[in-house]
Length: 424
Image (cartoon, rainbow, N blue to C red; front, side, top):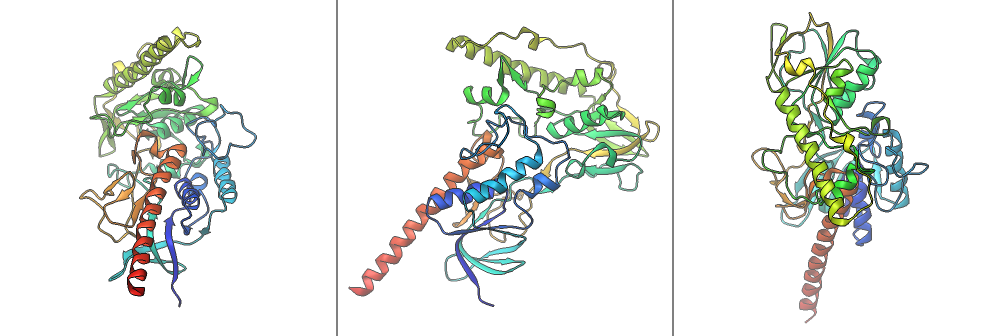
């Protein structure tokens, strides 16, 4: 069979792949985008039914298109987010081919470029952009044996309360996914235990401005690396029901039982670290620090934003904080299911080039890898804090596309110089 050739191959047709396609087109770089499923498939099939974007519509979008029929402060549901990307792909005329899986990428021998094995044949490309992001494989810690009794699923497999068997639910993880799922289950009448680890807990909004706006004006989106000791700290923020600040004390007052970080399981008993109060205090400190910086910014710039003293009131500690549960017999507690909101890991097994460190993470600088011709897009902190957000990946794609375009110009000069030498 003939081998298809293309200058640049983009692997992944989600937000990263589409942003990459737009900027490559603007730079005049011929390219092809391969997506193994549908455009933005993870938004449709790997998110729970009621999920909305964590940022408002004015913020969590690409610069070239607004969300249709939505106010700027709306939090868009997952299906409409996926529809948005489909419409965006059409608007920019992205050369995307769906239903094609990339199985292997390896460097060509004796000449530049890469050989790409796909489910639809072989392609050769001068450059390859891995735009599959960092949230590829769900992580479920090896804590509770699969035959222990309760149903166990990752948050990416959760859809709605009716999906779970009868009984109480233990949700492990206090980031955005874990908190939102636990809250939904409690509102559905389930008894819920929530395992709370270290986290940041920003205000959803303060002084009539969304958290995303405050991060922008305070320069926090541009932070180039997480602060020391915060690499594995999750962020508890939600756009559910129009957007509310996550408040663990309020969740407990509504009937949710909070426990510390999940440590181990033995003979039907789950053990939790005695760190619940410490973790919540850390989240409170993060929350107050944002309010302090926001107040200072308002005063310094003379902004007409109304004070919000109620935002600084912290409720009383619930009993589950003052007298924490350190061991829980799952059967006696009636727990019928465990939801692991414990994040994801990358999977670049298809990328057979030397661009990974000893932990399996890409070696790169702002998406430009140590292997010439290999690029990454959609990684957390790829260039700054905002890199894994919709708008952030768009700006990162611009940098990667500029690099690819510049390399093409060098190679074009080389080819031209060789032709002139032969003519002379």
